[in-house]
Image (tube, rainbow, N blue to C red; front, side, top):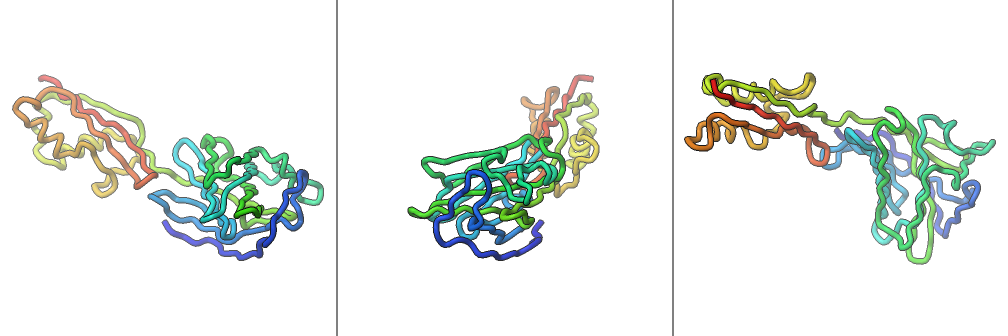
Length: 259
């Protein structure tokens, strides 16, 4: 899906921006250029830009949450401070609402500098919806710049909300038995396909244009009818739903036994 949620422009510092060890420096860039939810390689991704310096991309699958910080062009990534919590009260803030950077849960320094870095957390770490504070340091030549990402504002800092997306789920691997005569009685591609999709867990999409089989249904039929390779035996295929990097697969086995 492609849906532009919010576009906000903010000035960013032109000189080197220092990071105060306790609170954010007042001149530290408070930056939200773009908040978008769109599709990358089949995955729903939430992204915020750090001006021209880089961006943060957040997505999830069935097991993990991924937060990737990327430096653009000649910029390098030198520092990352990340904090995630279900509620703003879980952030290390001061009485006036500033944030204490050196008490954020995740601290990374990169020496030498890198072009990207990915945090990975188990899917059930923070609930279905949570807040992300992402303070990132970039370097361009000899100059350093510090930026926040997010469309929600604290006192001299920013953050954003992320909601887990429903990732394709093909269910558990399945198998079933069928007699040789019953298998022979399956007279069409459609009937054979129905046997395999009938093994899928309830709720798994079964439409002809939704999932793919590897080997294909025709490959399985041709093997069954082969004079030496066919007949009694196991006929296994992998059923996959989703697109690109956001897919899930299940192994389906039809065990043909003698009558």
